[in-house]
Image 1: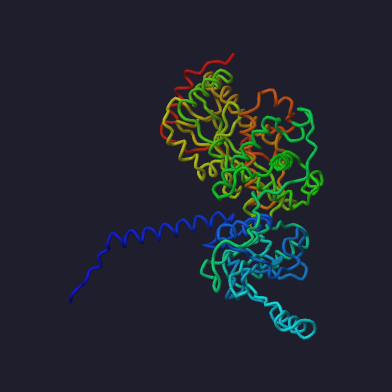
Image 2: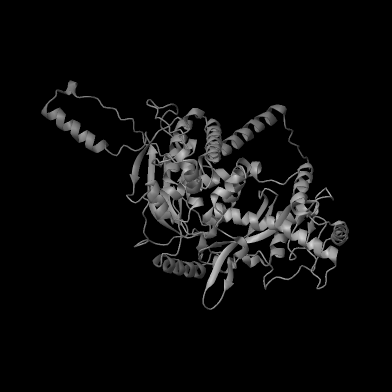
Length: 576
């Protein structure tokens, strides 16, 4: 049997690379359109303003123009209701639009909007023809009848937008009729009792270039003015406050506020340049930063906070989420492990203050309380459950340095287990075991494992003088973790009790940790005295700042930990 091998020529290979590069570039361009891309030309954004931005950007890039064909009155409205609405799980199969596809999360359809190419179907052709016939018969001679030529050529290209309210807390794991029916009933009950938070998503399906037909593709005769930013302005808050009032209201100093405005402006300018838009068109961000700071720093509910900014609650919270997303984008800059040289310098400061040598930080975990979630999250995030009540929250594991700056954080659900079990699930578990410097280490409560990089106190009933001195200095160094949580929850009072759904709460916690670091890195130490630290983490009975009944002294240790603790015990000196 003759076998003929296909020989790839250099020209063919080059052509294939070009095509591949075009596909990759197009996919990256599609990703620019959406906050979350589901597949090429399809995805969703989190606000109506952002959806309009996507449509405008798509028209500019493709030199096309789309007009509104039909839109439901409820599309884009901030107020939504489940009355007479079906709880849906996926879009019924249609030839043109398949979004949203099944992802296990129920939703209600708030409204739809369809835009069609300006060269689409001529739906007024019959009326125009009759009108011209009447004019011809009544007024004009035949050669005077205007010869109107419609630009409509039945181009089928359309943009589909769907405004849906998703309920992630009622997600099903199995696509079965029984599971969906049960979750639907639970969702109906929660909605009636107003105990559920809905997440707005605007699903967008953009047309492919091949969908256009019967007309030239190119610049339109009247290009539309493009919006320069996806951010919307809020009405002006009276910011003519003195430094003390500003700090008490927004929980950071004016210089830190200005740093946030400038940094966000830089990020938005870069985003606009990447999208091919002028970088100098970034809208003012000062009010957006103030809204985010106020929400994180106050205990006002969303309605009270939005009233102070004179905007609807949904609009304010949309701004808060955008501010949180900006902060999360700063994580690599403001939340990172110290290198060896910095660990050694930090250890010198802590030894001077606490008497414990080699400590570059304190490891611990705390509970961030939240209102009762719905669905399966009730079990995962409950840390106290009795016949009378249940309490809910996140486990925030953290490592802080001498300035109370977070160097590492990890969020988990209380269902994961004790602090040691949460520790094993975090990235810090691997990082600490691979630290390169033997001279530095963390201090941690006895519920954590003893290791060369984690020093825990002696827990025997009878202590020698040196062991007691070790524990005393260890306790002073360990206060860094409690002090950090006191500052964190005092400054950002929203962290004392969160009231959004689980996914958003997690985002707000991470963003607040980064904001905590930005503030401490750019403020002097006297600011904390002026701020007022009314929250005392050591008195928080629901916190994890002491060994609880459910936790015991960790019996596991990492090779070398006992030897290092024994050595430090022998050389420990009084800090006085």
